[in-house]
Amino acid sequence: MKNWLVLIFIATLVNSVAEAARIKDISEVAGVRSNQLVGYGLVVGLAGTGENTPFTDQSFYSMLKNFGIQLPSGIKLKTKNIAAVAVSADLPPFSKQGQKIDITVSSIGSAKSLHGGTLVQTFMKGLDGKTYAVAQGNLIVGGFSAEGADGSKIVGNTPTVGRIVNGAMVEQEVPSPFGHGSYINFNLFESDFTTAQRMSDSINNFLGPNTAAALDATSIRVRAPRDLSQRVAFLSTVENLEFVPANAAAKIIVNSRTGTIVIGKNVRLRSAAITHGTMTVIINENLKVNQPGVFSSGASVVVPDSDGSMAEENGRMFHFKPGVTLDNLVRAVNGVGAAPSDLMAILQALKQASAIDGQLIVI
Image (cartoon, rainbow, N blue to C red; front, side):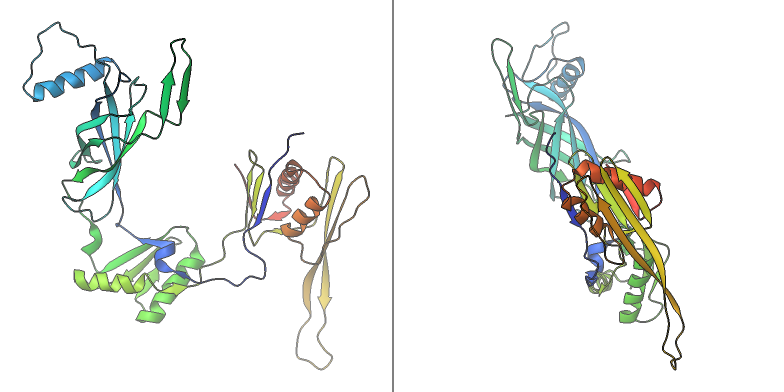
């Protein structure tokens, strides 16, 4: 049987103390975002690893025409040192004219490799069709390819994709809504009503009541100065405020290909009994009543009293302490030497039986 590499992570210990986080680490300012740019260009100078395709030839003729070179009609060039490419980049927020950004160059034809090539001047456009940057430069290609006379071929990584560090110069700035209006919105990276409310309360406690308000599970609106210099100083203060975010929702992530299982802190098991092959898992949940003292003013409280067991053919038994968690289940399965596939099957069966308080995600 194939050996599995299993990594069982308990994301946070049950008795761990929640840690504070800065606002800048769990959210971003609405409107302060990057923009995608794309362009079509030619890579020249390839050592016979280029292509001869109709659109590559057309692009090459257009480039020559722009330089005032008109080829006689009926002449077809057979060059193998050029390649048609798509050029892409992310334009960071607040990028100014003259600044440079990194670009990625990818072959879109039949070129075998872009190694040693040079990208000629390429206009990079945004979603609105306007040119925001111009790219040009020598490619850095991490992949390689080699081909023998008998047709044998060796390819490492991807030789048809390269990068140019600082390969594009910004020619036009993207308008930003940062300085507009009397409010700034923070958007959480992970939507959560409790986290949004706690973040709003943290800002109000520091800057005064009614400064911030949670609009929904993602957005927190904050009243900010209209003057840009004051707004920058204001955001510098707010984004460094710390508060305790809400605990993440109970989740179990199972990667069936690698055998990796990630278990969140708040996952709990309900009463259930499962038999998988020669393994039997039993989880019982009972109720116990705690009575107050005779002369006390307290009231009776009903609390859960959980226990569980697991058995295989060898008769080994495992008893859980009250308050069964998946941590107990994982330890019991590991104790009998079960395979990761057995644990995955148990988790899926428990979820189908509604015996897990949490979301099971299989990837």
